[in-house]
Length: 475
Picture (cartoon, one colour):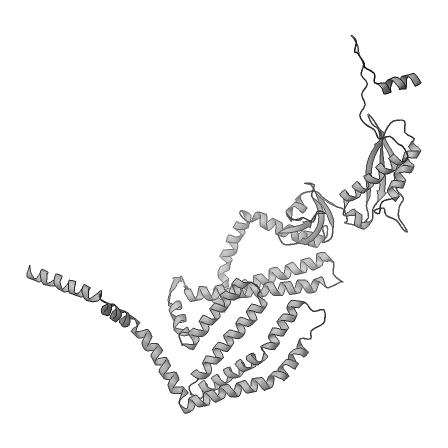
């Protein structure tokens, strides 16, 4: 009983001691002791180097390399101007990149000279901490400046800047290698392969970087192909898409190889991918193959005016791996899956020739002079700007198609200019406008439905108006 009471009193005293301010300070100090000791050791070592002969030599080396970089900047800028000549019609973005790189000539040359000096000191067995710190910070600043210039997105720019400064700080404090070792120790074994947290982070970083580089390079290739006059739009699009897919595939393979993934194990993955394509990815794979067929076959090209089975009409602007971009005459962009162009009927108004004939139907009342109707319709056709004219053009025609219930049904048959072919609704509206104007000019009556009423039995009272009575008296 006495021993239990003594233990309880001791525990109470220990808790009371711990909960005091002095106890909390002692606990925190004991836990932070290794960290404080590490930073104290670094500060002591740097102070010792600064006030030693070796420190003075390192400071002198830093100043000498800066002076050498400044003196070499003029020659470096001239060399950059010869390698990268700027034309007057160069894009604003490329001019901005050129000016940023030109402004970084001195820091880049200085960083290179500092790295050479640091390597020389390490090879000779001398301390190099004072040189390593500005070299690391300078590298981080240069990379951040270049990245923020190439990538306009503020989120990615801030993310990259934060990451670069954190890595630079860890390198300055000599904590980068211990951190890499700690992350590499957090690993799992999958057969003969070992997957660590550091490997995952490194692989993801390399993959994102390579995909970004591949995307930038593919856009550069596509812009250069679009400037070529010897290649058709379909061939340019096919080459651009092939380069893009090839670069993305290469980026993934290189990232996996750098990480250390055995590429021979992809044989099993390719089998699983085939099963996935057969089920979940069937539609995507069908669109991909359809896009390649369209580009190779040339039945649908960029710039063609097409009409789908659904009634959608517009101009083909882009043929991508998954869908085709069509812009209607209302300036509405619509993405159509490529498989619809292969599996369904498609009307290509500009496949072989850019001129087309259309028929504009109209009707006049029975009893109208056919020759006068023809004259009015031809005048209407010639009054529109959409009629094809010039050498080799065909004249408009007026056809009497049938005898309708309430009208003589005609068709105005005209050949359109290449520009008018892509605007069918506007063209028909213009012709209808001129036809109505011409018919009114010649006093030709427009038809309207008429019915004859026969009374078989009984009587029907009829009330005549004053106009009807006067007309009867004249007759």
